[in-house]
Length: 496
Ligand code: ADP
Image (cartoon, rainbow, N blue to C red; front, top):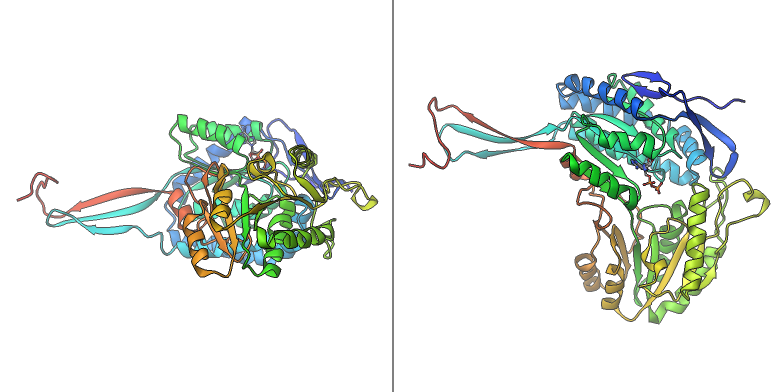
């Protein structure tokens, strides 16, 4: 059966790319399975999409926010009805297991309900004026056309974090999904149009980064950029956006650590480390890729982690018994292989995994063994650089202070975690770990949509997704003064 052809959505019409070029979206668990044929777009398609979004903005910004919110709420309801179908599509195109892709769709539902609620808030501020018979307030205004560039690891949840707050605030959007996972973003956008979103308010343009992503960032009529992806690409996007003073939200890498102290509940910590490190095959920006274990329990914990990692079932995520899916593509497996070699050369002890899987059931996919390095030096490359694969480095530590120092000793600062029963240490960790997210007695993954998501240092540029941070990014403040005194009153001058 010929694979289905998916088109771009521009100005409410499903259209082919101007060049007529397309590309195939393949299943990373079985590359013989072609999920669909998607448009390979370029600058001309982006120009069309931005023009449509700019035109739609003039009407959309005037729709009352509670009405905009009703469409978003309805989209959340439709997503729930289609949850299983969309989760299966996502497992096929992205690889993570069904349990996780159901969670990814659910995250978009949660975001829809949360942002729909914002439609009746979008709170500003009223404040007294220093002058008599004068009224002052600060209101949130939409930014205009927002450009969004998404990664492949949360192909519906992350686009929902970008699109839904932008929409409730009255913006219009052009989104480019990652080349490996366009279908899930397509499903989200289709749901929004089915929910009644007017033409041109959301436009989806598929294709590759330099061809279809870069023109969004460069376009003079795109007023804000939201990007999630690698630090390398994020740096370029930030530089280009800065040239035209465009607000730009960058969410990039992590090198997240779980600290396990001697007094921790080790059974709980073990479950947390396994889930944090090997959930989504280690391909989350919040994945636990370091585990810092105090010396009293270090060896015992290492033995248990190795034992469990070696027994995780790796395979096609559509099989409900599978625990770890494939990596997204060949390059990602090559990166993991590269870091396993680096780790060995640096003298870390490889105690589990370390190879791409080559059993017959893995022959057509990008599978890698869950990998555990022990006795890793916190300063070595495997402990410093983001791998984005199923690899965890165990680092021994002396005590609490030493653990915090190792945890903070990287260039990233997204997520973090500590397992301890000591309430004083838990609170010190909340204060002293330098990261955007800290979990106590839970792994580094599991963000909820109404809390701020983002990190410090090279993880981002200070913005937050989720929660009110998203509303802040997709609005700009306007100060309004209403003088009803019927005379000229000069602030700071007419003080008597
Ligand atoms: P990853 O390594 O996780 O794939 P990337 O940063 O390469 O992360 O990709 C994240 C998103 O950025 C994808 O949608 C990709 O197409 C896009 N992208 C890649 N290069 C560029 C670029 N030069 N300009 C704009 N977007 C880009």
